[in-house]
Length: 355
Image: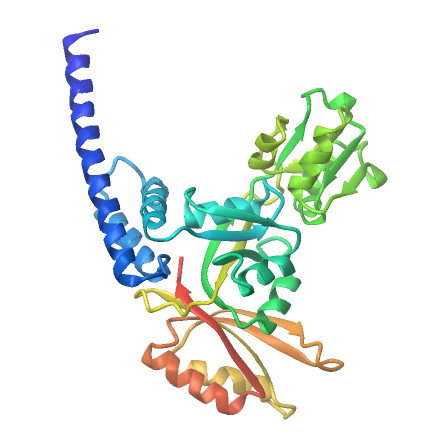
């Protein structure tokens, strides 16, 4: 070992010792805060502010993405000193929903795998879990209808959102594709990888492509059959010990799924927020235009408009809308007040930090 190398390592050891002291101090402060707050350890607006501030201060060479990942884990550790959290997600282990939950809350939480989106809502409503993570839309396949339907019915609030890039892999017990006679996956993933599968595995079509309840379940089935492959994520492959035969096989390299965090709390303003709501129009000429007019009049930008059958009557629809700003912001509050007067139905699903 050269003297220069030893000197550099000694410096790293000194920094690590100092980091350990600082982390211990931070954890101690988190314990004190937990005693003062008496619950509600997860404050989405506060965590968003912390991460935004650190990204602004970041001098490099670590990119902001890595800074966010690092401090998400630090906050997860310190949050656990205040109050343990249980997060429900659409299981089983290895799904993209689990990956989204860990991306938002960090690894120091208890995760609760649920059998359906309905079950995620039930677990949070019954307080068996503090929060839930549910998929709401995919950039390729569109809205997740069941999540929208349940948001309309639930007393829970939207507390946050997670945008997760979706990278699909072809997984099997081995890398010899000539031995593969069937492929398992979720229908949405088959759709997302349709062109790649046609080009690279043209003999595996029709009944050779078998729908599974989830990508993780597809990986489980492939792990039980040496002649089967699965289209799934990396986490699922790791959980079931599968070999990666091909990576990033999704047809759209920008394929992204948006997940929502659901919980019982109202989220305070963070300074950069989004509000989600659902509404329906009165049965009058120009009623839909009338719903959007208050947003324009008060300078509130709309980032999403999604129609969905209301299930209250034939050909009746509700509209899911995302707008910029927090419901406590003056211009948003005024727009919502006018909307309340014009809409046949209006429900604010929640305000939360914008990504």
